Amino acid sequence: MALHNEQLAQEILSALEAKFPRKVNSETSKASSFEQVPQEEWLLALEALYLLNYGEGTPFPRGFAQKFSAVVNLRITPLGRAQLRPPNYLAVVLLEVAGLFWKRIL
Image (cartoon, rainbow, N blue to C red; front, side):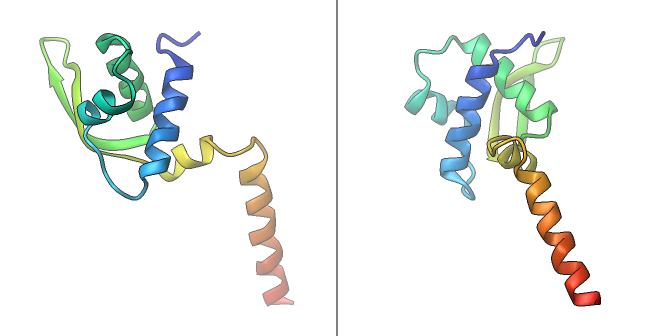
């Protein structure tokens, strides 16, 4: 069971996808689209996305435990974009690429 709010993480990914390829500041994004979300819940979801490699940016740690306090230059990664696709999307793409490869060889 995840400690972060997975629904919130998906919503953040969708928001980052809508901004792609532009980079955003986590606090600006929170203020414009996620103002009702508690700060600790917001930061935990951002940290999870960062650690899962679904989002990239420059985190700013705070305190002795080095928890996230913000992320600048935040952008969705290719892995994060794939996470938003249907479950078999990546397999279909790989099969299509493999088929094209074999057509070129034969």
